[in-house]
View 1 (tube, one colour):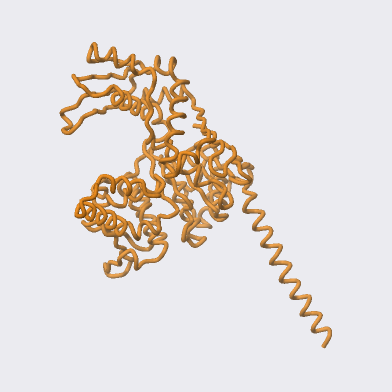
View 2 (cartoon, one colour):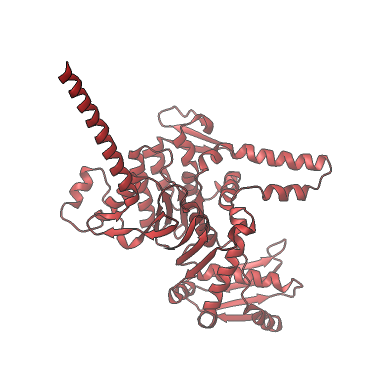
Length: 455
């Protein structure tokens, strides 16, 4: 999927082509977080769309109670208009996504370019079963079903007085989910604020509950207070992350597909493991501590920062999902920055999609090493062993897209076969630092020599 942005925060224009690994880098305040949050909103599909061809479908469904939609016909007749309606619906969602006034995005444009044949084939491949029900699941009103490797989407309707708008929104949402499944199943974003959120989410939840309790006690409108809390100045990705933290006790009942990777992070970077109590309190057990538990506030900044990633990999992550990380290098020593790059690349190779924004030269250079290791050269295995790489540490150049955010635009980063990603934004800073260090050192040496000559 190619996403074109225009007048989005500090971004005048630019486009991003999502890949298995998508890298965003550049100076501060250049729009990386705007792009990350926008991508999150698109991939999560948390926007209401009402496809204009569905009223005709519902009329026939009301007559027969069962109606089949052929995906090939649907995509042939309505693909362009569906994409246009998704763009328009998502644009309306932007103020809520960022928790700002509507006027902030009055000039913003977002355009999508997708391969219809690829989306159609993936939609045909996938299975779909879902019900619209109110209350008990057995008391459903609308049932949508599609078998894997079939083109027919079957809609079944029971007698209902539900407004047509609700039915259209429900069917539209599941058509979007079905045809976009090639891009991402589910999306999870680790915001740059995660260290503080991991530490204070209990207090934030407690404050919210106290406000509601006080509102009821003082006979205020509790729903109005709740709406004010919901509309608090948190962007949707941050609110969603808080919601994730507040549901730890429920989430830990599930098992993700990347538990081994979570354990690798705990062993190689954290040197210990997390534990979540039945009340959702987070503890850390350092290795060789005799099972002594430490509350999260008593741990290092790295331990505070990595809780969300480890818990997500342990309990939620599935192949085909998209993991987004704002600044994966947060609170990491350069050696551990290299380690986390290798771990993220291993996740990509195992079927998880990754989007990251970074300021770290170490991160990009290690990524280049893994891209170069994907080339077939004679001493590859020897070098991997010498420098502590695993035999499988490699990233196919075709699986990564990289972009520079600077000068109010998004520019694809250049790839050179023998060097990897060329990130001039870091090279210029490093060159300037080296030059200034050189000048300072030799200026001092010259003055010392002059002083010695005068003696």
